[in-house]
Amino acid sequence: MDRMRELSEADARGSVAKIYEEIRKYYAAPYVSSLFRHLATYPGLLEWIWNITLPAFETGLMQNTGWKHVDVSGLKPLTPLSKEDLAAMKIDCVEKNIIIETCLTFTRVSPINLVFAGCLEHLLLGKKINISAKKQDEFPLPSELLLLPKMVSWEDMTERELTVLNIFSTTLAGETFIPGIYRILARWPLYLRYVADELRPLLHDPVILNICKKIADNIFCSASEVFGNLDFPEKEPPLNEAQKQQVLQAIGAYRGTSPQMVGFGTLLVNALSDNSSNN
Picture: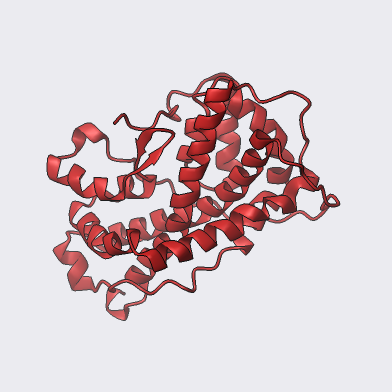
């Protein structure tokens, strides 16, 4: 199966490059998520939806709506890692902090993406939108996170590393998708094996998946809270019916993986931070 199509940040030009820059600004994050990179492969689609949702990003409403609806309290902690455990994984204090920063980035970005995806799905399905009063509040965005390490390229991974990484694979728009957090953590193969060992049971646990679904549903449905601040278009999205279905499938897949990024990312941070012997 082919891997998910995307337009990388390095390859973006013109209006797409400008939007990528704005995404990094309003997310206060050092990268553009896979959802946007995938939408950019449909000519004109990213420009269409970004023009609609930009007003809610400019005031911070989109971002803060996502963040305030996050609740991962139902997830049990992972096995904590001691300083000795990390040393065995060839991870020093600097690298530990890079891993924590990486996880925090994804826990910041994913809730925003879910609200954004909720807006996009409503528009693509032509659902009736009840527009509440426009919210005049402006929300200060947090400071920018550090630049993330690059995702490990598929060509640079061994077969064993690819096997571990494929534990986290899902299907997005008919193509194999592996969330970016794991592709970055692949820079530390021994740590990625720990992540795989800890999370693999959770990825197939009906109880955990139901908790993740509730996390996603709660954030996704909060999209209605930003409708009053959107500039709804007269033009239809630049998609034919087959493309529209592909995008809806992509949203569905992202809806499944995003709460895992929020929940599992938080668990990974806590496993590195909670143990006093790490300090």
